[in-house]
Image 1 (cartoon, rainbow over the protein chains, first blue to last red):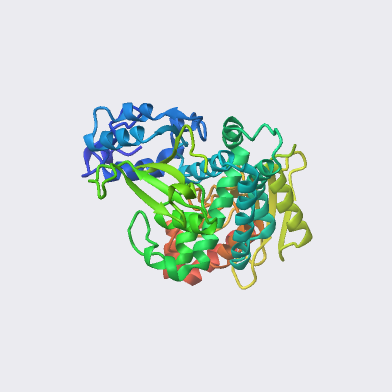
Image 2: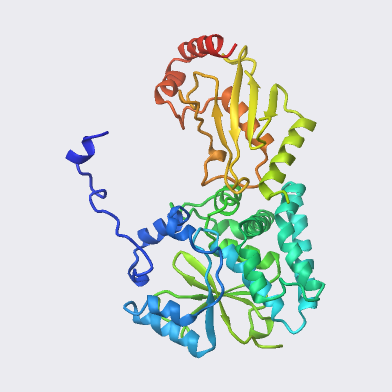
Length: 302
Length: 151
């Protein structure tokens, strides 16, 4: 027991951090609070009670959280709704939300394609092509294969067609709510991301910064501290690496207070090769410190 | 069906049985594969060299997504091991832990830490201070502890 802290209030510790919950107006979060949320989310019981990934909720549920908040964010949400982006699949805020959102969107994209068997085979091949980089950076084959297996099983079940129970939206969500499979896939994607960054060091090294100190990190340091451990949130470098590695387009709708740069009423940040409507990119919703999946209920059949 | 955790523990164990690390023995608990006993022979050219240091490794159900907990059961005089046997090693910290880290790597890192203490990130700052300022005194004390507790 220390009495020192009671008699000697030090600056910065006398202000109790406010409680941030479902009712907090997210547009009022400070950078510090966002950082704290990102780092500490996995320790909050409230987070642990949430499913790893949810069945879709209407976009209006997200809108309700912002009703008293920034008009700019509401404007962006309304634009999404008017343009058919009407459902959100929420990922648990445990620092793995990008990778889980990616997996869900990746599988749902296959499911809703005009030829799921073909798309599944393309996805399977894309993953196989990402594996030599893992060998190159000396990841242990038996280990990454074990982590990768649940994802390949899911993709194979699409490739084989048939009436497998996972070949539905509900089946995908169920598979990704199972902690074992879901966490294995997160680790596998982290390893794919890391091996891509490590084998394309010259491309990434100018952008590899510590998210806490903003100081540059070496490729090895960055991958060891920001990519490979679970619970470390993905930023642009990781997202770009995963998109490039698996040859998939990703569009992220930024739900922030920034002004709009284009005639679109939302800022989409794009990664990977083909982010046009035809390329059917994965679509994620970003709120500071968190990623979810946003989709149109009826997907365009191309 | 064996869980990821059990499968992985079995695999790590069989790897260590098939290619044992020199100077290191690993035995799982008879009733519970999730608890291992590890015995490390003190590295030569260190004050620990005549000792045998026992650790336990405790694997949670979340392993390998969460790190195992390693604890020294043998008292040792070392800047990175406290009197309760806790050890301070970067790769076992929850925020740094990588699920692909193998147990052989973990044990090797502990062996390296015994061999080369890290006074810059100490668990017992008084020992770290002595290690930096009075190496002879540190070595004498460490050797005393070793002969008293580890032989």
